[in-house]
Amino acid sequence: MQSSAASASNPGAVGVLEAVILRSFGPEGGQVLFTRDTGQVLLSRSGTRILTALHLEHPFARMVVECVWKHSSATGDGSKTFILLLASLLRLIHAAASKGSNVSHSYSSTKAAEAATARHLADKLLAFGLKELDELIATGVVPYGGCISWEDFTVEAQTSSLTNNLCVQKLLRSFFHTRCGYTHCDFSSHLTCELLSHWNFKNQLPSFSLQLVSDYFPALHTPVSGFPVRSSRLIEGQVIHRDFATPPLKTDHQPVKAVVLTGSLQPTLLSTGDVLELGYRGRMKEERSILHFSSWMESSLQGVIAKLQTLGVCVLLSAVKQSAAVLALATQAEMCLVECVSEDELSLFSQLSGTTPIWDCSMIESEHVATLAFCRPIQLGAHRYKKHTSITIKPCSLIICAPGEGQIEQYACALQDAIRMLLRTWEPMLAAATTTSKSTLQSHKGASLHTDSLTEQTPYRSIAIQPIQKPGCVLSAGGLFELLLHYALLQHGHSCSVSPDLNIDASVSQLLANALLSVPQKIYSHSPHHFLESQRRVEGPLGDVSELDLGLESVSCKYQLLLAVLQCVASLLKVDAVLPTHTALHTQSRRLARTSWEDTEDEGEG
Image 1: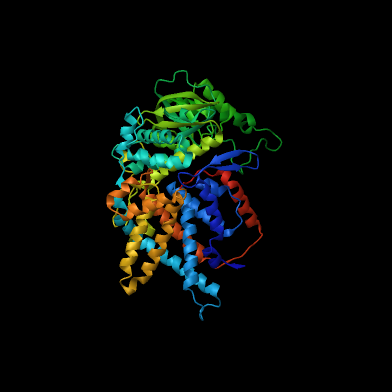
Image 2 (image 1 turned 120 degrees about the vertical axis):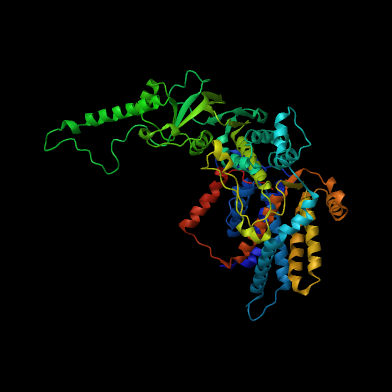
């Protein structure tokens, strides 16, 4: 058993994670080479992918990686900066606790006193962040930035060439540069803008479209290997990643009607627990013979097919595999059937068409039938899929190409994280009193997008919560956010030191300011004079910071990152002791940690 509060404030385990992350951090950072047990090799700059690929035994290291994963899953960005800030804070807390702790009757040793002091500082930092940080950012950081406009997507979609003066383009270019390198950052940002412009709904907030695309991204993109990255494009319609189980329609340009099935089309002969009696007292009863049940099933299935024909249905999308009898009758009735469609794809189809999936086709009504503009097969790489589009809403699908499957996964995860980052960017920062109970954007899964419901399913916030910053606030990248907030925290600490009652706020703000300075120091580690020059410009006149232009980054994402780091520090230092065990639960956790990097998506970037 070991005292965890003292060891957590000592940046040992976190320092190892920091050393790994630093290899790919900043504009000069490189990629990390992964070698799986199977011999497969993968290059990545994703902070989340790098961290989850490590085989970690230290309990605090696993806690930190879990915190990073949760944060990057929500914001899509900041995993590397998370580790750098966390390591810097723990070092400063450890140094402050070593100087400010004294052995007394309350503590049996110096280590216990240091652990208590570190825990106290972490709690004060978190309380300060929840109470004061948003206002400091609003007054000391936001005036140096600007706001991106949702109209930039529409303008970009209407131009045939890439434009470099749009704020959205600069924001996305900065993001993709750190995730995929310089080569394809312009192309990826243009493709993202084009995708969002196609999913833009009238009379809706930008967060509505962003949330929808984020929720259904697995169903909206199709990976195609063996082609260059610049072959990635948008195509009209929704792609169902399954081939036709029956011959496709002969005419694919006329409107067709479709139904979503969640169960088997053929009636069930027996349910679980039922008993089929084939004879009675040694004599076979005609009405209970197996032929009678088989005939009843066939006639019931024919009745279902006839009812579908009456409604004009000729496309069946099934969540389960259908029987051979269903395939034969569907082919005979010239109905095309697609089996084993994923839940995400069926959910998106239902919301786009405004229809309801049905389990028992004997109960089908007109509200279960969707009208499609077309339904046809499409060949993408080595696979053939089914493609369609609805009459009321014109969807589009994203085709992501790359030479190998690993590269496709990297670009797909980067695109999804970019959308998450934009979604967080358009969320206004809220008042500090309600920070811990902020209303998050509603997930649009389960909310129909058909006709009038588009104006009803909008993100909401409590009336009592007042935003202190406009949505879409961005700032020049390259450590400007940390430098500005560092300067604002120093000024805040100086003003608080005037009053004896606020000395604790002064020490806490000084500690946080020093920790923030570590980020631009790491960014400009290759040229220290650039760091000093940047620091001088921030402390100078307001106009000088405009020269610090290495792209753009989201202010809201940075704010959420700071809160997440402060919460992680407080959680680490609240643990009193670590008890090593060798149980089945421990074995399972190691197995999950070993396989998580194979199944995880690129869930964030710093």
